[in-house]
Image 1 (cartoon, helix red, strand yellow):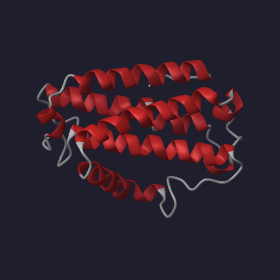
Image 2 (tube, one colour; image 1 turned 30 degrees about the horizontal axis):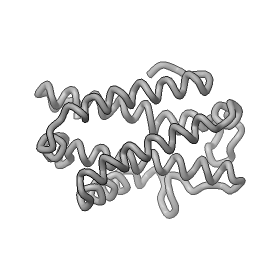
Image 3 (cartoon, one colour; image 1 turned 30 degrees about the vertical axis):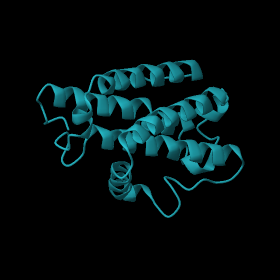
Image 4 (cartoon, one colour; image 1 turned 60 degrees about the vertical axis):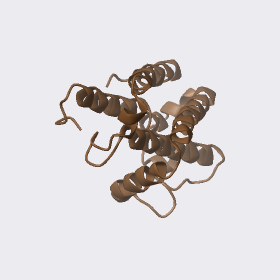
Length: 169
């Protein structure tokens, strides 16, 4: 993924990769969105629930940090060693909600993180020593991992699946 060095580039990369993901998802039937043969036992719907959950996690962490409090990352009671458990939980929770609700949340979580990033200063986004919780990494790295890089990863999987190649998933 290309490097970004300022807020405008970050927002452009987020928008570009999100548009790619949305174009793919928008071209799928309800049956394709629900097809659990997409990746293991996941569906594209599960992927959308999963990406929404990570958008909300980074949004909460940034809002907490901007408020002057050390945020738990990735969430209270979890560490990065728990990623697989969190992903499974998020996909399952998405399956328990109506598809329309999952799609609406996907749009809402994207808009929320995009708006938050747009409101942040360059120092808040790119200052590598700005946040104690980020262990010397710029907040933009966390944003990218949970937005444009994440969208690109799953868009590539959807493209491979649509082309009949499940080795990428």
